[in-house]
Structure formats: C-alpha cells, structure tokens
Image (cartoon, rainbow, N blue to C red; front, side):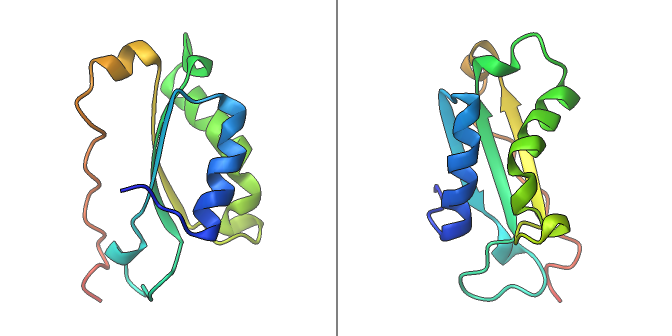
Length: 109
C-alpha cells in the first residue's frame, strides 16, 4: 500500500536522487498517538538502489536523511519518524518483503 498524500509525494520526489529500482512508502501515522485523518508524520520506507552498494547500513540511512532533511519536523517539515529499509538490488532479491513495523508505545493513547 503505497502512500499518495502531499508529504509522501514530496518524499518520493527527493528520493529519486537515489535512482531507486524499487521504492515503497507507507504512511504509518495511524499507528501512533495523536493521529487524525490525513496526517502524514510517520512513514515506513523501503528503497532499493545501486547507490547503496558497498555502503554500510548507517551510511545508507545517512544518504536518505540528507535527501529528506527539509521534510523532517526538526527542520520545520511534517515528518516525525521515518523507518528506513535500504537494500542493494542483490539484497532485495533475497527478501520476500520489508520487515513489519513494531507497534508504537503510545498507539492506544
């Protein structure tokens, strides 16, 4: 279920710099406290790119965060949390799907 709200569209646009072979962005805001219809604050990103080849996981995450930085709440944007699953094409071939997201501690508030 790919997300298509305005923030998701912006995220997908900036992530095109990675030239992804696969990109899936899911709005998981409804799983968190303070959710209201249409909120786009918590996302799960699965991205497959050659740009990650020979890079450690932390470096992959840094590449993604450099691109999405203007959209983060710390920079005045609306994205509070971004769960990143970054794979090389070879790694992705070995996956059946992205990992499930854990439940938010404040989900029932």
